[in-house]
Amino acid sequence: MNCYKKSEKKSAQLVVGGKRQPGSGAFFWAKGDIVHPLFLIEHKETVKETMRVRGGWLEKIDRECRTSTKYPALMFYFSNTAFPYKRWVMFPKDSKRFGDFIADVRQVRGKTLLLTVDYLRNINDIAIRMGVFPLFVIHIPQLAIPTWYCTTLEVFNEVYRVK
Image (cartoon, rainbow, N blue to C red; front, side):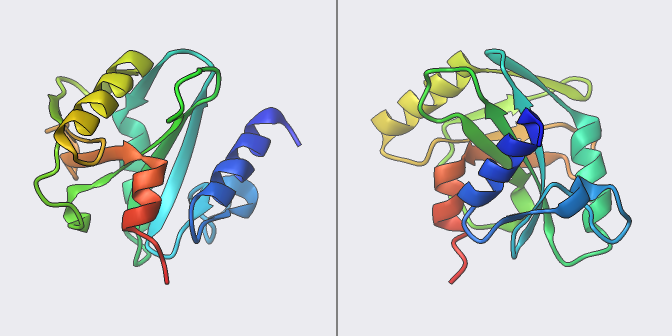
């Protein structure tokens, strides 16, 4: 098993109620990388301190979810950083579980969002000072689902805990 598959498997184990999709979406009946009772999750990893979140990834997982009853989500993992919150999850605002607990709003021109560990650390610090979730909104007007929430895997698990 290569390193990426190991990290995907570990991420799937960390998603409460999640499991790794065999073949990672290679078959028409098994889309996405991680299956959660409410979400179909695409998993991306980087060893760098930055990640370019591509609109194509969000469009792909959104398309794959249209034939199911699940919401799309994108998990990204910063594997080579000392920052404790290495795994973050993006999911549509339509999933409606959060109130007004937003630390920041990012407006994106084009279809690519650059996220850095420093920015995520800053979001986390703001959230701690405000006493809210480390959550921010990403707005990409060119996508079918233009508004996405982004938060840590820990908060995602707490909010979308499957009983």
